[in-house]
Image (tube, rainbow, N blue to C red):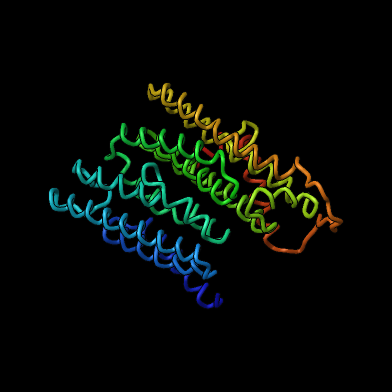
Length: 346
């Protein structure tokens, strides 16, 4: 892709995100989401492969439908209450339609079908944008309207997302699809707590973005798209594979690592809100995710291919991405000890 075109699309992405997260008016928020959608489409389809074109088409249709629902929700609310302010969403039908629209934007169950297919068709760098940056504006709208939304509906959608994200990721061999289902499961954790402690949802999203960025950049660096290719990379870049191993365990939410922090705080908050059964169910469902993360980690480091080739071991490279991966991996694995400082900051 032409570097100038790539620059324009990247600036448009940042502009759309900035407009949505800083707006008070529904029309401005909608305009920001539309700019985002139009900016990411050429990045998804830049390889001109049929699967990439299919992914871009699916993404456009789903996001256009979600934006229409969002606009309809805000217009219904304005019709009944005379308010266009995002925080003044009070009409029950508007709240229900908005929940559906944002769930569709994010890829929450039952509107999750598009996300694994689109991520599978997109390149790894665009996949990283789809899994993190593109979810930030809808999460912000969730945050601003969290007091108006139905907690029971959100809890049901969250538990279904955690269940389906775990179950569907079990038998996948494509790494991008595994990460897509992982994203759906993480969204379940973010959604279950948003009615009770919205700041905790944002904290979870930030930490999830950190860990996902480290994973995608490491996979992009070793050019691994399937589990079979991941098995052969240990001989080429052992240090990078070891870092990827730690990041995957952190994404799974194992206790000594950063990924355990949001789950721990969410379970604690749910228990305070007398929702111990929901906390128990979502904790058990996260074990499904743990299985496929462990499988990925196993393929990354423990398994050696049957015929090892003589490669020069790249313990040191001059690529700037590796510095970024090193910083992100450090943050993805070592933030738990300073959690008393992180949570008040959120």
